[in-house]
Image (cartoon, rainbow, N blue to C red):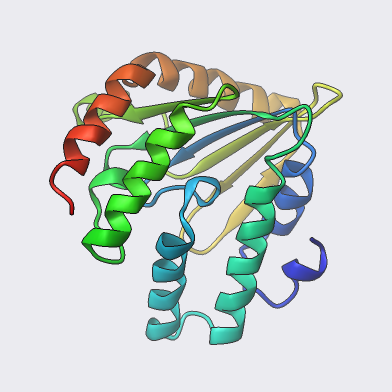
Length: 200
């Protein structure tokens, strides 16, 4: 895992976050605009990295390293005991087309499959939340085996890992508020299934 973190042009703080994620007992994710990495299909992830290469943001080698790292992160979820994974996705994540209709259809199917797992909860934060949405940027919160907390938040150009409880606990509280405001998992799956009907 550590070797996969080299030369991938990752944001500051993210490599350390990944090292903690693979041993976390609970993982909480909020994402805007794109399906979070842990829930991405290989084709969806490849479309994102391919676009970054086309823009000149990363090299082809860095894209390959990012995809390899993502595959390792996803594989690390299949362990005993499995971590609890809570994912709240802004509605934009499922409505923003990535990689064409076929790629998007498979990605929506993957989200429904994720929701059906015994150790996961998937919710959509609908556009109708407006200002009640707790976060404007992606947020990741980890509960480690010793019950300590780690948060990771990022903007377009910076990432920040935080361990200090005086900063992390308010974010955890805000995340809980977001979960209350978001659609239930049943309503989330219904929204995704309705959207899926419009794809091949």
